[in-house]
Image 1 (tube, rainbow, N blue to C red):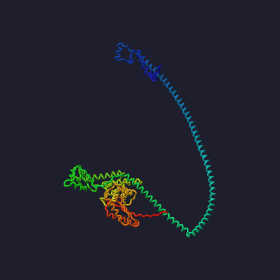
Image 2: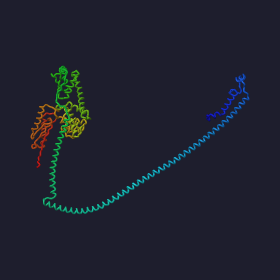
Image 3: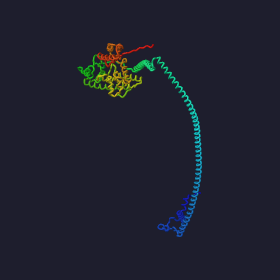
Image 4: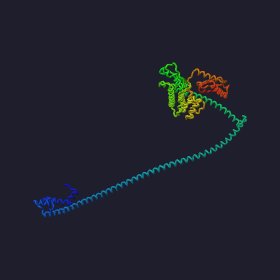
Length: 577
């Protein structure tokens, strides 16, 4: 059987619901609408008049009474039910409260039990840890005690050993004292015997001990000097032999690793032309074009019967190059007249300056150098069109730089410093036709002006031995310059004039008194004069070099400088028997 909820039951037993239910029941039993008023009027009365039976007063009263009774009964039933429900809920609440209290008590007991167990566990753990710590401390104390006992035993042993050593030392001290007494007695006896022996020797030798000592020292000094001279000579000879051998190896290796072109001197340039009719245009009316070109460039323009060619003659390679390029551009342009010639020549000069600068930069890059002043690069580029005996000065500087770098590497010196000095050693030749003075000194001044280091300046100034070198790299620069200039094929001049000039140079030297031999070397840039020792002294040798240098300056015409070296040899011969 389904059980209604408590809210539905309380609603059914409410007084309003009971009254409403009674009214509906009465309306059904009496067949009268429950909404009919007690005092009908209007249409209701009409309905009653038409045959509807009206309700009597007793009926209405009974209905009202029944309603009241029903309401009272319903109220009582509702109150009874409410009390029962309230009592049941209160009982349930009390029961629930009891259960909650019981559960709380059980949980509290469980918590207390767990707390007791945990407390016991913690106490047990603490006790165990304390016991372990005590055991560990006891173990450590036992170990310390054992070590102390061992140390005590060791100290006792050491103390015993020290006492034993002290006793032995006392015994030795006593023995030493006895020995000292004996030695003192022996020393006294020896001194007495030595004095007697010395007196006897002095009587026999006829000199005192001091005199004999001095004589011995003098003899030892003389022998030591002789030995030192012999050792010094052997050392010098060995060093000279080793130095010459190593120098030959380094120079040979350097020359073999640097291969350059064979040079032939030239004073002309040939410009090809498209046809012979172009010759007339180059000459111009009454030769005005050719005169304008020669005046603007400073060269000689030779137009002869050579087919399809014009010859440019001049001793300045730079001027020849400017004239050659200008003529080529004029022929390509087609407008050949004095005004156009002057314009083209000026443009070509600017272009040639750029070309020289670029060529110098290219060589600097090839050598792995850097940090050059732009003005110094311009001066270096001018060497592209400067020659010495047919050898291009810029390429000669590059070749000398390579050789100098290789020699510096072999000797463990500064390679970049050596290369830089060799590259710049001839920059004085770029301005030697503009300023007076040796090109080495002019080059040193230019390098100093443009911020080069003191070593570079010295290397440039010393490469012809006009100043003393201050570093090994300066010596290498001079050697590399000489190697580059003196190698076969580097420079060329007419054979006949070359031979005559060397013969003349040697004859000037051999004409002096006391000269044994004379050799012109280094392509005539140096002459070595060997004199006889018995005829000329050292001071006279110096005077001979000065006189010979002045005589060469007066009687010979030559480029650059000629070094005069006078050699006077002294020989001392001794035979060991």
